[in-house]
Length: 429
Image (cartoon, rainbow, N blue to C red):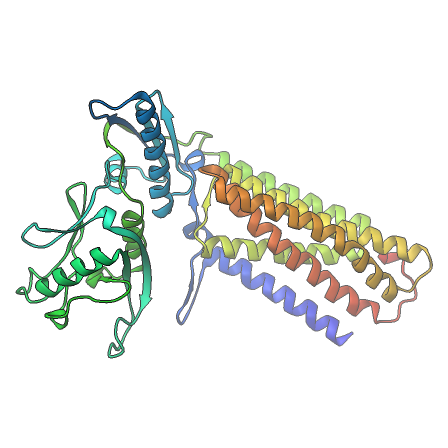
């Protein structure tokens, strides 16, 4: 009895903590969790954004098949660049044979959106005299990292590690050796995209004569050492360059496609559905139903915190994914409790019925959840735009439902089953 009371108390406290964190945020030492209103970004359908129409500047002599292939490549690279920048809910699609439409949520200034995307994304690394050190093709990849650059460093910082070919690595080493000896203010490598400088990391004097000679050449970010900037730089370098230039021919701000009230309506509909489900569980399954409601509240509160921590991009399909997983989570308990009821009606004790109910239901629950997980992973792998939002919420929801809706009811019901009961009507007997 005492153990069961402690378990229920801990679960209730966790629910209260998670709900408090999702509403107000949490800052304890190095742990910082933003509140849900700041942690998530809303999609174009809920909050509006910017629309850019690009027209391809096709070189003379290109065949129709080459143009078509180039447009598909440009489309893919724009999507990749937006994903790298964190705009996974953006829409990118072809319009005609030589135009691409880009819709970016939560960016009110179209000029800012154009600056982020670039047009050809021609990446170059140049010194203060304008000499080109590396081209974008010399870089096979980039990774935003955090840590100490040398053993003697007292503190860690964000930096970008470049993956270069052997020839490019040697060129980078020679150039940084030369740049390190330049006077202060000129000892930098300018990273340029489409002729515009996007970063000017400095090469410290310690590299004079040796250059930056590591397996992954390092670009330190100086005063711009923060995770967002490091990830931005990683995404820009990593996304390559277009097969031909793109010229923006139309820029405009767009409103929420579903209206300003769509988010409030969706959330309200979800809350009404959850309340009705909780009432249904108590009415039909009584004590086990009450336990399922407790597990459901834990599931929802933890889901909100994870959404906030992961800075999820949320659109209407994403909300649909959340509501779908709530139904799946409760469905798992319904399967278990129906098994439990069948066992009790055969005259078995509560303890043996609980054990048999969970044991007989686990296979069906795990099989259905695993198949859903596979579908979510495939959508996450191949999906674009709002499909990604649906895939992410579906994936998170299925994993959490298996944890919260199976472990919590099992712990509490197993503890209750160990107690003496005069009547088992409250358990469905």
